[in-house]
Image (cartoon, rainbow, N blue to C red; front, side, top):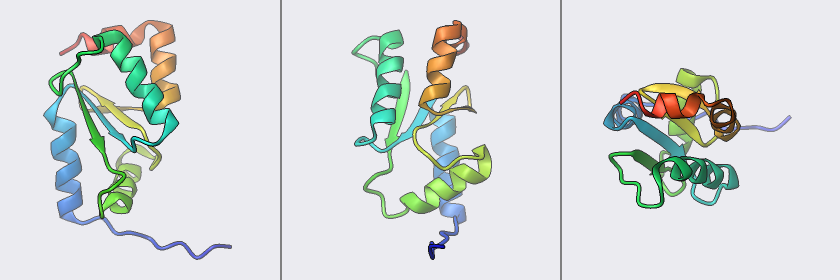
Length: 116
């Protein structure tokens, strides 16, 4: 059994995450080198087009942040998962890349994205 360090999330991390979630209709916490994150961005780009702006989708790359572990721990505490991407639409977590893909296939994604 490994000895994993638990990162405590501070109110600063909580405030940062909550501010980001409230900052746009679609918010994604990602690590740009993650293939699932790239796929999720591609799915959303297919809806918005290649020239989407931060008003359409806010993408927060946590890969190089010193508090990335604490951010992921906090995301787990509010969503049940700490993996990326963590995708929020209308301030509600819809899950990760596979969840986004299922919403697209079912036709629900377009409805969620149009509920600005």
